[in-house]
Image (cartoon, rainbow, N blue to C red):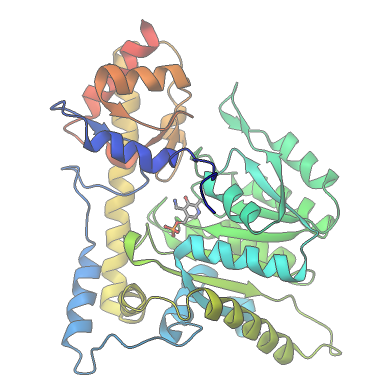
Length: 410
Ligand code: PMP
């Protein structure tokens, strides 16, 4: 029955990890996978998370029971405030439906499943380039995807004109997937003025916005700053269209393998003829149906940790400090890499490395250079030239700069 199945290539990113683990050279650098590392190159359990885990396990009611289908309410309620802000009009007006998801990927999958059921003819617009899994998630559910220009390779900046043009020429009411902050893979975000133009064009065309929020607080260390686009979008779309937000706690709480996340649907203000309570209940029931058939109920352990961090003021304070620790180390590494490349007189301008934000830098290195970095220097990154800056540390940044210098020069 299965003898003629096509053999698919391994996942590009996870395959890097595989090659790295079998590389016997003494010095190797992993700039592939997007996971935070400390200055010793080790995974980092956030101090706020360690404390939360202690509290959870000391609880006399500690157990591993199932959560409800919509997940842990203390997580979803805490999470939506992080994203929308304490003073959010949408929260005050009670227009938000939130459920727990299997991290950010699960939230995106839930969105795709929801679209497939209720608006399957809409085109889903993704940035060019985007996180590779975006295409896979929406296409696997049978949705049609299209792309909007984003990265101008020549200037290593935002192709705003192309972006706006795509919004204007897309069929009215299309779905636009927007990276809330720390765009993956480019590390390039629109500035505040550009966001206003992008969102205005989206409102004018009645498009539906899906914000993918995988790096809030991780990019700048400031949750509010990193939520700028989401909050502006909600304000501008408040009277016209629903907004979907897929929220991951993989990076900002370091919950990578615990799969803690949320799916939020913010309804617009409606006139009195619409029974918003009924709409919310219906949406929630449909989301529950999706979760029930796919997961039965979402994972509990990571959810309890994140909920404890979000609902305990002391731990919330510690978490904010933890995000500053991570983001400032990454920013420092960006500067050290750029400065080393400049002092080595590596041809080209490397300022984009410090201008970009979040986990990644789109270095501008060609696929051939990336291949040589791996072969000749055991420096691993994806062929697009995207480097996970979290893989740099004070012990290897100079080595990486010298390796880049060599492949660019010779
Ligand atoms: N969206 C983007 C843009 C991402 O980079 C990631 C993580 N690489 C995710 C969503 C979701 O990740 P996770 O499923 O681990 O939360």
